[in-house]
Image 1 (cartoon, rainbow, N blue to C red):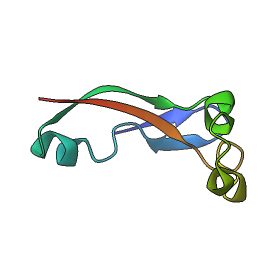
Image 2 (image 1 turned 90 degrees about the vertical axis):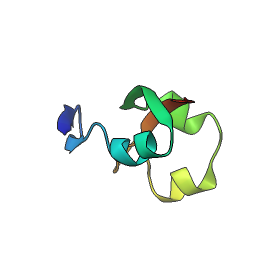
Image 3 (image 1 turned 180 degrees about the vertical axis):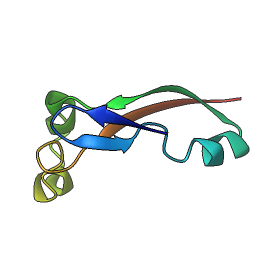
Image 4 (image 1 turned 30 degrees about the horizontal axis):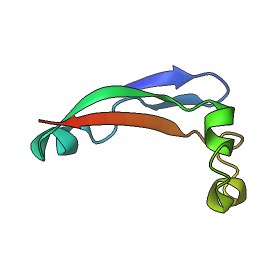
Length: 65
């Protein structure tokens, strides 16, 4: 499954969900990360990769069943 993310075009909206379910996790939330969420941790890798600028970042929340 894929969807459209503003500024990035089409990207997977439920990547690897089957793998998570197979290991006992249930997806609770999967959404594009806001730029402030990407910048808040101060990740040097996020800066190097220009995450949120040139490539999408997703927030995934899952619950162990």
